[in-house]
Length: 92
Image (cartoon, one colour):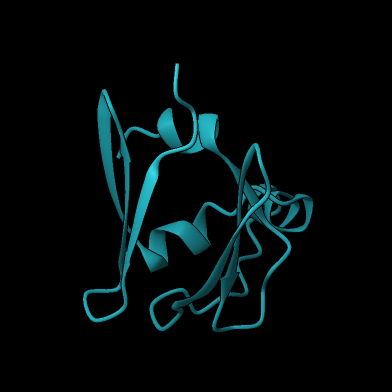
């Protein structure tokens, strides 16, 4: 089973496409920022303390970490590593 997808970042449409042999995921930069799986963001969501203006955020860089992608955002946040399994299991 292939876990690492093919990835296409569309900076004009503010979307990212993750493509596996058996599934395609199209997600906006905003959605990615809102679901960041890092501990800091998870804690903020649990406390209902969203301090991010996700409507204006953009993906600025993406780095392969083997089991997932470290995604960097225009608001300076770069701590989240999005595991391939996490992304593939999203139901948006």
